[in-house]
Image 1 (tube, one colour):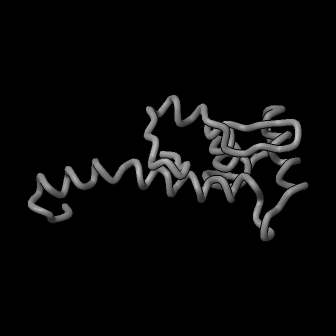
Image 2: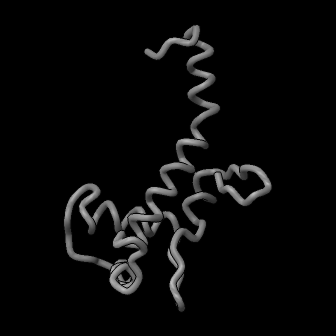
Length: 104
């Protein structure tokens, strides 16, 4: 979901992953690219050297712009997590309704 002041806009997974999550002066990175770099290079799953030009570009952007001393990519992941939680709310509510309001 994206909050744009006009309510929430819900998207399919492929549409969501294709959205621009981080934008630099001359570059833009999709949700999929940001999550891939944060998981596979920055230690979300494991630490590794960047294996693509996109990963190198995003890491360079992180070095240039760090709002409140947090990498732009990690800041974006926090915002993306909020969107995913909001998007899952109807599913969770449906599960709770099916289980009589009790978590299993």
